[in-house]
Length: 293
Image (tube, rainbow, N blue to C red; front, side, top):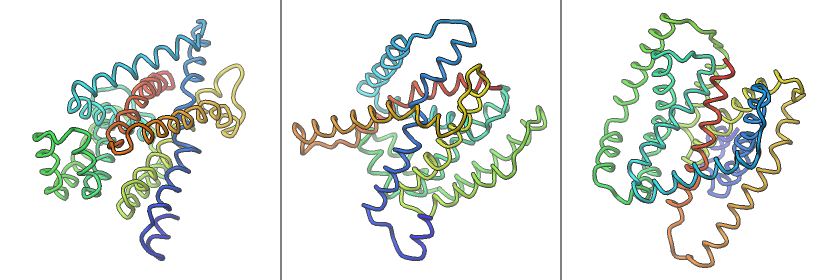
């Protein structure tokens, strides 16, 4: 719909981009991460262990704080780590039935990395200043990034070829069920990101595909319990309290920033905040993927 509007009407205004992104973030993006405690609780119940929400939150906050400290001390390494774990997380979701063999694990990493690379290098004009601010204009990082931009065509074609060959090797070594319709929809989503500005392009994949897929995986996992969730809407409803809390926290941080640092650059800190929140979520979903097989 957004891509169609841009094609027939014209470029999306900044307000339209923000409306689209905030809408997907509010209704799908943040809610799918706000279910992590239910996943951990279900796992504890299946293991006949006592689940402590307090202990879960403390562990969550500890990981956020430790990664945040890493960003402050080693911004470039933390940025590279974030790209790697994000690539793995996306590939793990997109290839949901892949076993934990060496071939399939590498295929997942390359698959998620390809999605990231496709979105980032095809929006180089918007991404370059963001990366420069995040890594504080680190010379080596910017040289690598500019090299990737200058060779974006060969880079993406070579990556896609390598991914295809590796996927065939992995499938030949250990076949898995293939949902052609699902892979087709994923391909369409990735291609549509090429036609959109950076923010809606990334949110189309993250909210319109990745988060919805995660919702389905979480629902299927919880349906196996003695007290299963009856519908996707009931599951979404259970995410509302923490979703509202997350938005309240972001609003409070924004208000404090505008009051005390009105001339400061909030983008690097916003990116760091989002990445630190993502890390414990990725760990929860990785454990869910291992249990779900």
